[in-house]
Length: 325
Image (tube, rainbow, N blue to C red):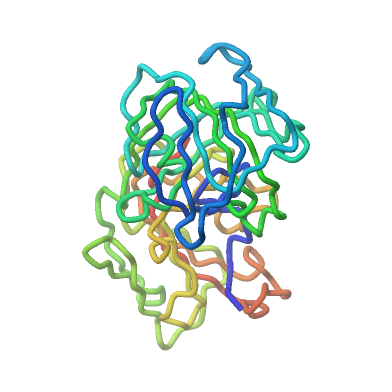
């Protein structure tokens, strides 16, 4: 059973929708509908996005979609309503947007960022994974300020999100920014032989050597390995990080965003949704930093453990703080 230390609190796609990616296609042109068939199955017929009306002015705030329900979505589709006037959107960028989501089967609104007052944010895929990211394929070559309609079949939903229904989305791109690819700053010497020793490969991925003759510390350890020069993080911010995880005493990692080739994204909150050790250990650390966290059981999963994380386990993390907003 896969060990998971973040228990669904970290997303590498849209936080609201928990979307997985499995498609390949070209960018749509203005006023057209461009299907994005899945790479592992024959295309399934979808209703045309020409049947979906955009109600409201692009960039003016509140918008809505109108379409006949049930609306059939067999594959990912996108249709550009209006091009933006901002910077061109690039692979690997963090993109924020206003979003209105509808259940394709019922036509009922499922989510609206105008009501929550907080835009949605996602990390676009970078490098070889860009051809598997439906949002990158829809946004590729377009500009900040663009308005578009997307149709996402139920197969694009993450099982961890409760089996999201097929969805029709109205998107307005608000901002696109380039984040760090790895920690950058001043290296901090590791001087405590009783803590795990960290080395990095050429890409910045961490590896660890556990101390052989000492037990785990009793208190939370949050030690800078690289001290960044960005602003300090605050509770309530949305953080983008690379991380790797170990059980104390084991040199083999059990979970890593480096292995997924995509950073993780989560809200830094001490609300029980995120490990307490992460919330306490990362708050106040500067963007660009790499942090060694050693989290005692009472700030991790305690006497219960989780899945195959044993009871009373001390957890070790190396975390690169790439962005905070």
